[in-house]
Image (tube, rainbow, N blue to C red; front, side, top):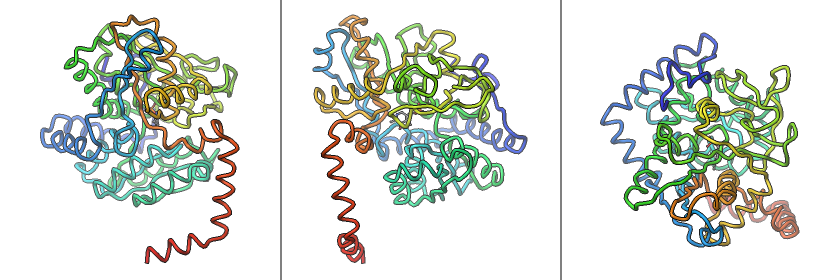
Amino acid sequence: MTYSTDGFFDRYGGKYVAEVLRRPLDELEDAFRYYMQDADFLRELDIIRRDYIGRETPLYFAETATKLLGGAQIYIKLEGLANTGAHKINNAIGQCLLAKKMGKKRIIAETGAGQHGLATAAACAKLGLDCTIYMGEVDVRRQQPNVAAMELYGAKVHAVKSGSRTLKDAVNEAMRDWAAHPDSTHYVLGSALGPAPFPDIVREFQSVIGKEVKEQCRERGIDIGAMVACVGGGSNSIGFFAPFIDEKEPRLIGAEAGGIGPGIGENASRMTGNASREGIMQGYKSRFLLDEDGQALPTRSISAGLDYCGIGPQLAALGKSGRVEFTAIRDKEALDAVSFFAKNEGILFALESAHAGAAAMKIAREVPSDKAIIINMSGRGDKDVFITSPVFRPAEWLDFLHAEIERLEDKKDIHDARSMQG
Ligand SMILES: *Cc1c(COP(=O)(O)O)cnc(C)c1O
């Protein structure tokens, strides 16, 4: 079941949208099917992947981690080495190139923490497309480093002031914009969810990760026992798993955000959590964290990228069939995994990806030592310094922030920098 049937994966998926969005979605589906068979398109995409994204990304043998964990051989797929620091660029570049072929001049996207907005802004800069990013006003305020980067790439960041002023509202606003400008504009959705055909499109552009892993393992004779990825909306995991879904082996494991505990509002565990329900939201049927009235519940995770109330429909179906196993990883376990891989391997995981790292650490001894566990490191952790520093070295971080504020209030440095710019 790699591809959906009429937009459905078993009972999940679909295209639950207002009539005005049907035509742009159908047009997108036709173009996608056409260009994925077009040799020129695929060649152009391959060259961009190689020279701009930096593919293929390495499959790294974590020798010290393997010794310390005392079970399976631990390998890490270093998606964090992709340009812009995470896997999101794979999808952003693919969709932007497709949009360009379709004659669209303008790109819009939603973003929560800002990672997808950043990847889309970069892709638009590279491909010469006009870019507007919808982002909840609350997120704009707390994710200024990413907003600054998007603006450097030339994107307009539109702060959404409706609803809870977070990701869900940004999606609604982007959908509204697309419905109003379907001819000029393409909406780059950031994860393997939303109305069909987005779950198929995003999986296909992200499946470059899994295809590389399969080839790298074949070349090096690596026998895979299990593959582990973190699951927010599900784009890095489904892309990583894709070439293995229709096979019986290896074990495929998705790590969700266990947050601070199993209570309502304490996590983002859509597959294993207490409030996990079937529902229809934002154009697709899947599993969500909902209250009894079907309203989205608040979620919680130390990692912004996993802090979302829905999961992609294909993963929901694969969870139901048992092909993909799900586990919830707590904030504390993810932080421990960040430290473990940083100290022992010199690799700094993003907090999202550290959920996959933590899950691998837990099952290392369940897998025999002649087999491998492959962790998808979806992104690198440089972006998380504002979250990890207050935990790992709170006093020094507070001193640093005070000193920064003093420096800025002094304004001398700013004037110096401005005058240098000319
Ligand atoms: C956004 C993000 C995720 C979660 O999104 P998926 O669609 O589930 O992959 C995971 N890791 C990183 C580094 C991210 O930026």
